[in-house]
Length: 227
Image 1 (cartoon, rainbow, N blue to C red):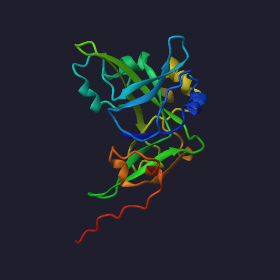
Image 2: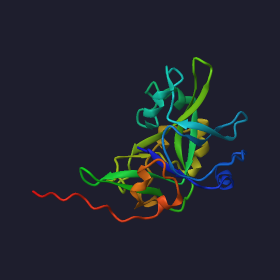
Image 3: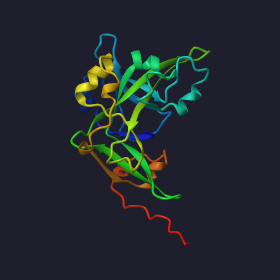
Image 4: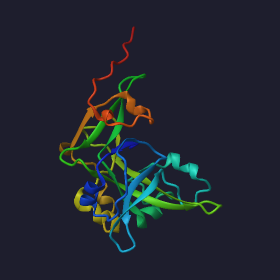
């Protein structure tokens, strides 16, 4: 799965890779959590990439209330074409979600969960495969939202968690957005491209949001049985 990630790159670096024309003032974020607004990229009216803001946690257009988004921040790539919540967005509302890497927690023992920061060698700025939706409340409020697609984790990080976000190769960014590529590009990265290190348990607190969260940390002590 993907429940926390980082996006701290300057906007001009994002522009260079993704090609959108917008120049928003985006503050670096080191602990992005579901239900917050995040940066995403979709096809604009003229067909080119367009940067927009969406709530992380998809709200299907048919939902009766927006609180469904708390359970919809990830979508399994294996079933995204069939699931009612995601199939329409898969066909026509795709997006890229820029990131520098993501966090995941390893269950060290019954009481201990070790957080890791996982990123890509030689690619400080990446993009997750995403879907977006537009939902209108009975009062007329419009909320745009998104979800991150996941896949079975690469072998090198499967010991941390069995799922990981779909990190697209750069040559597939345009193909994902225009719909010319499908599930065949929704795969785990090769192990050789993935790197990771342990980080502080502070990342578990959504109110902690600073660059020190990325600093390597020692392994947490595990519980020792007396029997």
